[in-house]
Amino acid sequence: MRRIEGLDYLRGAMALAVMIYHYVSWSSGYVDSSYLLGKLGIYAVSMFYILSGLSLGLVYYGRVNNANDIGSFLIKRVFRILPLFWLVLSASFAMDYMSSLFGGKEFDPDLVKVFLNYSLLFGFVDPSAYFNVGAWSIGNEMVFYAILPLVFLLSCRSALVLPVVVIASVAVGFYFAAYRLDSGSTLAEQWAVYVNPFNQIFLFMGGVALGVYGKNFNIKSLAASLLLVLSFLVFYLYPVSGDTIAIVTGAERFVLSFCCMAFVAGVYFLNPTFKAFPARILGFFGSACYSIYLLHPLVAKVVVTISTKIGFGSIVGYTASVFVTLAVSWIVFRYLEKPMMNTGKKVALAFERKAQAVVSN
Image (tube, rainbow, N blue to C red; front, top):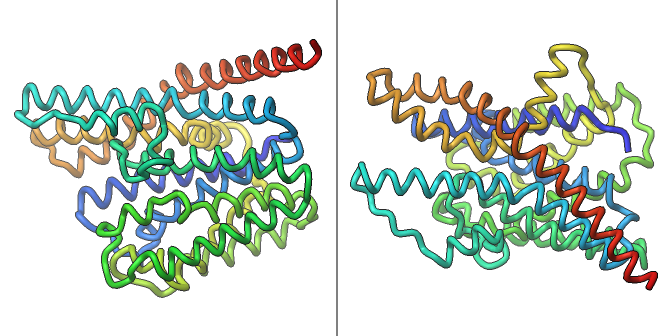
């Protein structure tokens, strides 16, 4: 499968959007949902789900035919997600422990939650039982990874399976937006409901459907460009304000989600590419998006604390945190993420060969 560079660029842009949203909201205290940044604070993660489903749909649809294929898929996913997640989780605990020693803060983590996080089972058991900022979405992804290969396996028996699952996921999303989440309360008060993976799965499955069926359409560059522009304008101009609950309930949930899906589709069909220096920079953002996403809260915690103590204040601290996060993310991607992804491919290949040898004997 050819590499679709535009999707890498979009991943990087969404990771940066989440980081900037957090830094602005932490420094100012609030970002209204009427602003583009306020909408992206929620829907950048939604875009990650769509992009994840799209990529996996492109690569794995039609290639999951038995239990061995499922095993290989899960091995690669675990090696992609777990090493960095463990690093960030352990670093967070270490920082909290240091704070308890020198800052007088209590350090008494719930051991059940610790187990659920290190095992990545919290998304299945209690999606709100995470420690690190943004980690809830990783728990969601693990649930999606458990469901997807089963959907693909059943799709080998019937082509109707995937459309039925996609439609069912949209129906569940409607149920959450219309009935489970109350537009009269804040999103913070209902966060445990919002982070339920079944409230998000329609985004992931929509991305899968785009990856599976989108390659059958020959969309011209002009049409893809128009799709990009129109979806962005509707997303940006759609009238909404107040707490972010306003953009995840009612009709707003599906209008904005559809805009995200359309925007990803536009990038997919257009596949914008760059040369030389811009391509390297944008490519780095895309490759290191997972590191940027998980590391930026920890980096800010350290940098802002230092900046405040030496008299520069939090604004300077958060600004510096952007550059420090990018530097640390480059190091972590190069020396942890990339080697572990390569190791995962080797382990998965060894698993496949061993499984084939068992079947042959």
